[in-house]
Image (cartoon, rainbow, N blue to C red):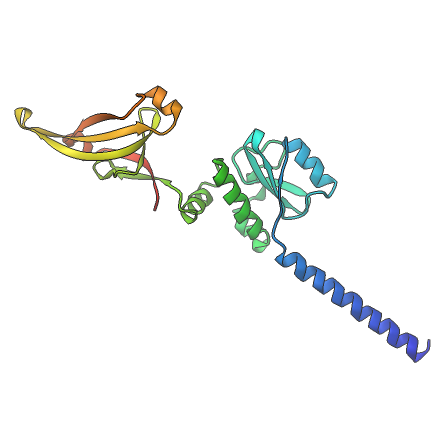
Length: 217
């Protein structure tokens, strides 16, 4: 083989290597794409046909499912998983899977699920993601420390706390804690009252009572 052919072959090899490197770098910085499907079965088909790529996000609102693609395996980030692999199949937190290779996809999938109001499969991740997004997270607190702006889980409903306080009852030589609340949703209002309403708890009880509220941390 002549020296010219050898040099040409070497140059071609260098060009191919440079192109492969550039493609790899482009893939590394390319953000995951969010796809929306009518069903998780349709989404699986899209992955099988390479229409949705590794790392992409799959959203199926009819099933309240959000997943990310691990190579060719859609894994649900939500409690509901439909036709996707359940989160538990990863065997570890999603951000730790494969040394964090899919972290960007996990972040976007969690953000998408939270914006849609879907429950995440990983409770710890759910709290972290909601806190990072400036959204309320469930916390336990003494009833006496419930604040205006909290969402109190009580009476089988979610109640927006408008105001709280303590009032003395001289005739009974006692005191009571009170809260002015309103159901968060129409369903919550059906379970309690349509408008704003107040309920009370004796301070002797409220001082030891632990409740769950949703609060922005």
